[in-house]
Length: 271
Image (tube, rainbow, N blue to C red; front, side):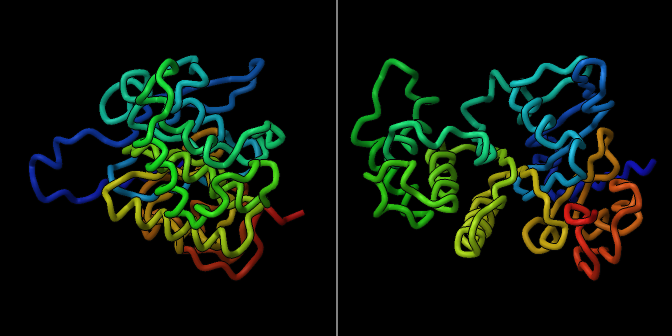
């Protein structure tokens, strides 16, 4: 099994000593005796856009939830910027799968975004003028400011996803974890998300996103982790997003995809 991992070249000694944005070491987790993650190592440098890709059941969402402390591994550990998640949770923002959210909950777009400020305010203090302005600014950034007083259930799927991205933005985090942010969205929303990811990277933020479309990995991300219960390869897209690693990840069901250029079908659409 290939376990390629490339580390970025860092010019200054102070940068070399800086902790990784996300570091998972020997993480193993099982559901009812069935391994979901097995001895997984993950190193995510600061300031990169990393995609986590793999077939259905590969453990992608499980890995994200383990990083967030929502699942406890049977073995191994996770660090965010050098410390456990419980210490650094105020520096982490999470965008869940849209399909996992109850969109019928009676609340406005503005209130959903303001929920992102609770981590710094605590649950006793209510958002004030400063938090409301930050919420509107985040909505403005994703093109949803005019929908602030709409019920969240009245929005389209793409609009709902942009609202959840705004909720993550208002947290002013250092590390953003996103579970399939492009799933089921329209082309306009997809372009807006890509623009947002690039803005976050330009600000030195780190994004780790579960992603299913192999044909857009090289266009949207600069780092990638290939996962199928075990980590197959991880590093810069140009180094590890190659057909040999993809075949190992998907069991030989990938055709003509190398370096992010696809001439065949994605395994998600392969019968």
